[in-house]
Length: 572
Image (cartoon, rainbow, N blue to C red; front, side, top):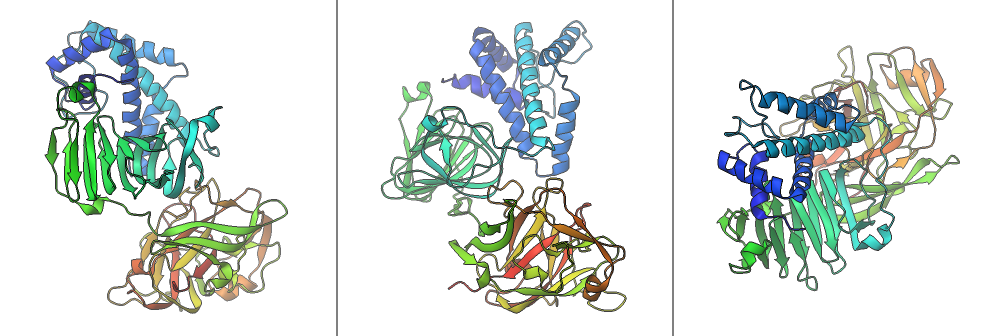
C-alpha cells in the first residue's frame, strides 16, 4: 500500500522533534481521517526505535535502553496504554503540565500542541509501538539459547532463487543469521543490526549490505532497502536489477553503484561503474515531472524526497562501495565424536586477498607453547580425563577440545617486548611456529577458542603481540571473532574434561608436574575462530614471523581458551 508522501515527511519530522505548529495540525488531520495511517505510524515508530538500539556501538548504552524499556512495561499492553492515556488526560486539564515530547529526544520541545483527537491517536500508537519494541528487546536480550525465527508455512512458495551468498560477523535482530546459501523469503523484513552480508540474485546481480540495515527481497531481480547501505554489482546479463527505497527506485544499467538510505528516507546514490537510472516512486511526482534521472560513472546525488527528483550534488567517494566482504575465516570442518559433537579439526575455509580457499589442517604450520606464566590457581588444561603428556604441543593438536586455557593477561596491551624469565616475567604465553609464517594478504594465523553461551557471544577478547618489539611493531587486540556464537558455521563440541590446579602455574614445567584435579565439563561448548593478520601488528608484506605472544584482554571475568593456533602457508 502506498502512503501519501507528505504524511511520511510530517511523521519523520515529528519523530525527530522538528515539526512546527502548522505541520502538527496537518498531521493531526491526516491521522484522524485515515485509520491506516495510524497503523503505518506505529510501524515506522517501531523501526525507528529498533534501529536506534541496533546502531548503538557501546553495549552499556544498549543495556541502558533495555533496562529503561523493561522498567516501563507492564504485563498487559492494554494496561500500559491506559496508563499513558491517563497521564495525557491529567496533562490536558493542568495548564502547568508540559505536553508530551516527540517520540525521540530533541534539544527543544515541539512548538505548538496537538489537538485532542491527534494526541490520543499518537499516544496510543506510541504506547503500542513501545510495548512491541520492549517485547522484541526482551527476546533479543534473553539469556536462553537463541533459535532461528520460524519460517512461514508457505516459505517454499514465498522463496524465490535469491540466496544469502556470504556473511561477515552478521547479526540479525531477534534471530540467528540464516545459513550461507539458504534462500531468502520474498517480502520478509530482515533487520541486520551489524556486520555484512552478500545477497546473490539468479541473473548474476549481487548486493552487499552493511548493518544496521532493514531490507526485503521483493523478487528475483529486486531488493527493497528501507534503511542502511548496500553496494550493487550487476554484470552483463543482469541489467535492469533494481533497488527500491521508500522514496526512490534505482535501476541498474550495467554497473556498480552504492545506495545509502537514511532514517528520513533521504537516498544517496554513487555510481562507480556504468550508469544507473533513478526514479521517484510517488504518484504525485511521476505524473508531473520527468520520469528519471540518469547518473553516469563518477556521479553522486543525494535525493531528499521532498521535491520529486530534486537532488543535491555530493562529492563522489568510491570508497563507500564494497566490492567484496572482508578477508576472514569463513568456516571449518571437524570430525564427529560418538555424542555428535565436533572433535578434531580437519579443514579451514578462508577468504585471503579476496580469494576463497580451503586448507586441510595438515597444510597449516604447527606451533608449540614455549612459555607460560600465570599468577593465580585455576583450570589451565582441557582435553581427555588424563593429563596430556606433551603440554607444549597442545596448541596445534587438531583436537578442538584440548588446549592450554585461561591464561593471565592485562587490560592494556603490551607496548614493549614481553619478559620471558625471572621475577618480572610477563603473564601470558608465547608460541613458536615450526617454521616462520610469512605475512601475506588477509589472515596469516588461525586462532580457535572454546566458548559457551554464558561467555561473550563475540568471543573472548585477547591481545597478540610481537615477541620482540621494534619501531613500527605493535600489539593487536581481537574483540570480535570471524565466527561467533551466533554464526551458523560454528560447531558444537564433544564433551571434555578440565584440569584444575591448586597453585599458579608459572611455567610449562609446572603445567606438566603440578597437582591437578580432572572434572568432566557438563555444559556444551562451541569452537569460535578468528584470523590474525600480521599486518595489524605492523609487520611488512612478505616479512616472516617466528613466534607470537598472547594475553587475555582482562576486560571481564571470562578468559580466552585457545584450543588451536596455526600458521597459514603462503598463497600459491
